[in-house]
View 1 (cartoon, helix red, strand yellow):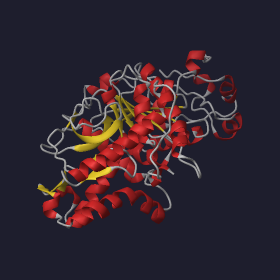
View 2 (cartoon, rainbow, N blue to C red):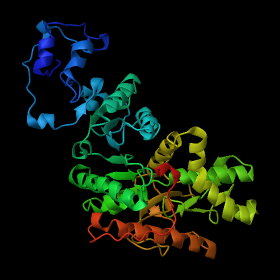
View 3 (cartoon, rainbow, N blue to C red):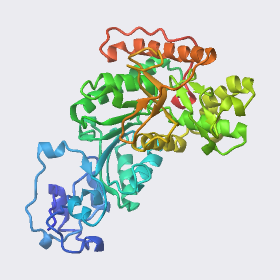
Length: 444
């Protein structure tokens, strides 16, 4: 049996525009399935009158009209075919599927998400046996675009994508989320100081941290992409004290991927020969691509690439300026490759790290073995057993060049922390950011 919910206006329209029920819904309904047809909050009456008709004739309605209660209205809206609630237990008897996992994404109407969501829905990220529930967070301004994203996901017929909901309230969208990808952030406008951007985006991430603390899974894994991502991640975790600080990551995987690419090009090998690549520090131009510990075909990079000047100067500069070069060529910031790097970051946490290798992620520094200041979010080498957790790698070496560079990016992150003290419960903010603009082009 199908259970339907109609607004008063929608009910009136049944007398005017009955339609045939789609063929894929025409079979008899099992008692374990429910179809909710809800009016999305920002769809105007004019749009309904001109473009939407019901799929069941008036004489086929067997249940009374349900008037949405306040609690019903507060819930994020499911979308289209995703309003079906399937009995996954029954399906699991014939399919070797895992229990469904819930992934929430902020900035879900943006270009990065437009690439990432379809990777997740297809099974490319979490695996071909992992059913997915996607919860998409946007703003009032982007809500119509969110509907468009949901339509495309619906039209893509991904078998693993079992539920999609859209909303503008993080307290609703983050509920029970097991993975949260925080992509949305305000870009830096012309003439805006870095301190101002830290404050504007910091307030957004403070609120999202509170929402995570209130409603997300207690072991939720959070990946912060919106810039300045290291400090945004720190603000977020400080406002979510009931969630382990270790579960928060800031994305530096794109820089790792870029570094592997440049080393491979210089060495004349394919990039799968490059391993043990670390990005140290902040997601800014103070970041440190570590060629000292990286390897090419199992050998230290410095044994393969003997051009020390290129490694210390050109290599680092190429990584730092790659995003700006791409913008000049492409006319927009890197969305597709950023989406790939987010997928890579997730896969690195849910797949055992190959023996002897590691990956980069900006994580909470408390207890780190490198002597880096505690209580900041700093990119460091990590490895995982594939359970979503990670450990820091201890068998790394340092020289004076590497330590000097690491110290500089550490000082910048400590300054950013002081600049956002009011957002992490540490008193009045003091913005003494280092001289010079260290912001990466993608933040503009």
